[in-house]
Length: 284
Ligand code: GUN
Image 1 (cartoon, rainbow, N blue to C red):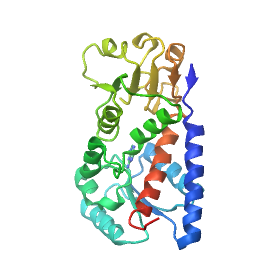
Image 2 (tube, rainbow, N blue to C red; image 1 turned 90 degrees about the vertical axis):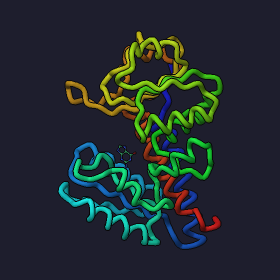
Image 3 (cartoon, rainbow, N blue to C red; image 1 turned 180 degrees about the horizontal axis):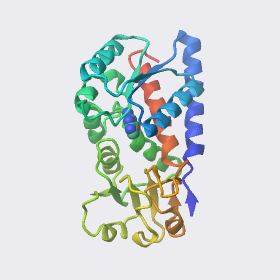
């Protein structure tokens, strides 16, 4: 069994982003700017947002974090986004999800200017991903997983891949990327019947269902490649993924750990998208 080391690969990605930003800064005296908006004080969101901010600093992206109160009105949030859309020093706007129930999430995503959609959540970007258009801003988690496959020279052509989870952020864009790589994809969700009948024959299983230790060793075949997108807390409050690492690791040929697998890759891809939107239209 080999570990797909997201910590190591994401460091390599960050080093390269950092060098590129330094070079551009020397040439034109400007750096990318990212705004991260958080609404309320969801504990998990706070942890993610803090990591994003910290890593922006590491690579030379100027980041600003707005923490709005949980009872902020939709109108106020939309007007903040409008203001940032017009700000030329801002190249990426990220609104951390989930948002409180009184706010219409698709409406908020729609308000972000297409040139600043570093999460890749807008319909146009998801559409471009489906079409295999290279100008797409790809949702960060699926982009990070694809990058891991590339770094470890895992060829997806002809592979049977099972994706568990059908979210707009992970499952749907992941499926499109896999199809474009020539994989045969089965998309499952929490209601899928006899899920292990599907996972047991898969060459690759990607689990993004948000259920601690969901995928067990007896649900996968020998030599399978396992990607764990989950970040959960178990009964003893310890961070664990959607994959029961202990029972799966001896059967897997490759597996991502939690933490240190998909998580750091997701943030590295956010930095990469921010560099991409910064460079767009600058002829660099
Ligand atoms: N919540 C969980 N993952 C993400 C993400 O990648 N982006 C945003 N904006 N919110 C999230």
